[in-house]
Image: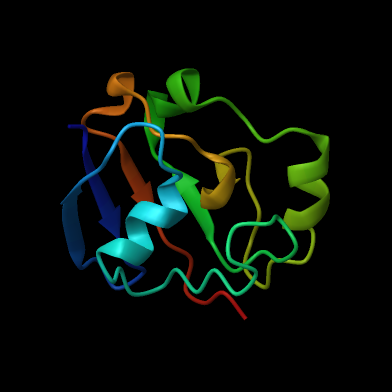
Length: 107
């Protein structure tokens, strides 16, 4: 079971075990991670599950596709090359140790 670390804007860390095949957003909600609102429930209709993928992890998680980037345009915080919608990130065994940072706000 992959271990995922969520780092809040204030530096607080939440470390959770994630089921493969679940989206990162589902994992965050299942573990009550503060800062992931997921208002649309994972339908890529909002940007309230925005995360920043740390360091070299983008090689394993992949970058946002065009539709995801379009939705990220609505994010209230800075969007970078490391920005992803956590609802679009499916957990794989290769993601064990993944670290993501949360923006200051989602709305």
